[in-house]
Length: 268
Image (cartoon, rainbow, N blue to C red; front, side):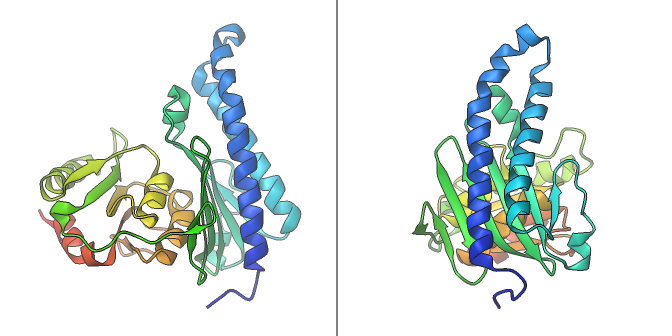
């Protein structure tokens, strides 16, 4: 059902404008990383500053059109409680793939979602390195650069391509994850890891990969991708039984892979 609370077409246009502003800023700001020797700042400190600037750009754009909405990002979230009480809230990751951005590895993205009543309604993921816009409105389909996209056609696991994001080295889930990784490597034709969950989910929606899983993620990692996946015909599943935006362990895949992929990950 299309939300009656917010003009979702207006929200989608705002999200796209905000993502483009932030992505353009990220690309234009990469030259600042080469100035760190002169300024005596660590590269990671400079990236943190750039990310905060991108977050402010996104906030300015969406708040201009929707001043009463909440805003949740991966730093400095001031309205995180709105995810629980159902009011409209923008869930934002201004730079998903920070380590890649720091090193100049072109796998990072801006991810923006509008969540109402606990459900993502609008999602935009922008890859500024390739100028690819992935967008979706709940109930109205998913697109890439304005063209409709769908998840991949049915394939057996051995013919399928999976993707993942590694847990942090100190994560208590690492031993479980390493077992999962080994099983997926043996069962699938290949496994990819770009370092950006947002881009992996966008690629799954666009049919470029067939399955994805990750532990230790947050709402801003998956909110935009959730809309894309559902509108592109893919499935996203909480493995710990919590709502998608609260879950710390997710898998996503094409419909025909759901049962075998879930079973594979669950093996002892």
